[in-house]
Image (cartoon, rainbow, N blue to C red):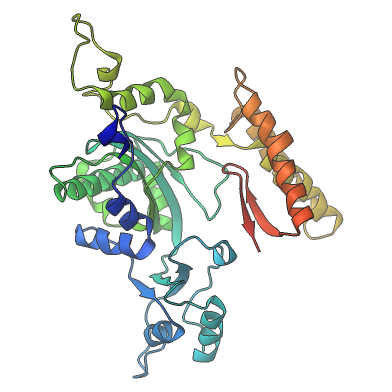
Amino acid sequence: MVQRNTKCAVVQFGVGLTETLHEKFSFIKYTMELGLNVPLTYKIHSCEEALEILHPENGSSVDKQFIMKPEMVDDSVRADMTLLPSPSRTQTDKHIQKLNPSLKRPFVLQQYIKGREYCTHSIVLKGQIHAFVSCRSSDMLMHYQALPPSSALAKAMFHYTNLYIQRAAERTPNSPITGHFSLDFLIDEEIAQNAEGSLHPSSKEIEKLQKELFPIECNPRAHTAVVLLNDSAEEMAEAYLSLLSDDSTNGNGDTSLTTLHKNKEPIIPSSQAVNGGYCWIGHDFVTKVLLPIYHLISFQKGITNLIKEWWEFGKHVLLWKDGTYEIWDPWPAWFLYVVFLPGCFWASLWERKWWSRCNVSTGKFFRV
């Protein structure tokens, strides 16, 4: 609507594609249709459906392990990584009853792949990747350190992403896709470790590694990992502005800002993002300074853990960058730590709305 009625350019996939990529099961199904590898995944609307897969009535055993996660965002079970099936049908049934899948609250039963989790962030403009970054991930990521762009793993994830975009674009030839595209991958621990350290791989190595990547979900929007491209802000601005013009000059024979990024290689993270990283100091102060003290005095962990966590905190302060703070613009960080987070904390006490975790990077509280 905005792009049709104004001169503005919109960096967002269409409604249909966004919905398909956002929902976990439809994303897996769509990825399979594109001919790309995915983990075995089922959509679950009832306890009976799950039990039929995990404990077949014919008595046959299931040779894979699964986890159940909500199709849509649900903070109450977000961190549940219980492996299924349980040793007995009764235990499995009890766990699924607790999750309570239904037609209005569907779950996905997805093959569990033991290994490392990674996430990517891409800027896709008219079917072309203009920026790409990949890094390790977790259930709630608060420390971002980019993989070396020349590593086999980073290149494999880039080529997987590029292939995904190309095949998706072939389905809409009259409407080049534009938007932010972020994938979460799982990969075997040993394979991931070797691939992270393998630099400047051959095309055959990349192609082989692609087959070991298992996407588990997609974010068709800007991902927090974009912070790793912070040092390339001007180049990213040029890429976005290139949507506003298809001309190579501004009418006076001069190269326009909107075309400076054309025909360039995708923007990749700087050495700061690879050798250092980005964190949120307020979060680190609580988790790496205060909590280790509490764990020590409550005899949960020893002095070795305290020293380790304090050492890491010091390293982050000296060598890493805060994801919100900039010396030339300190006010967003000030507002985050002095106004917003304390305000949310006191509001939750006043309203008696309890939460178990807080993602400082997004300001999201996970209710219990």
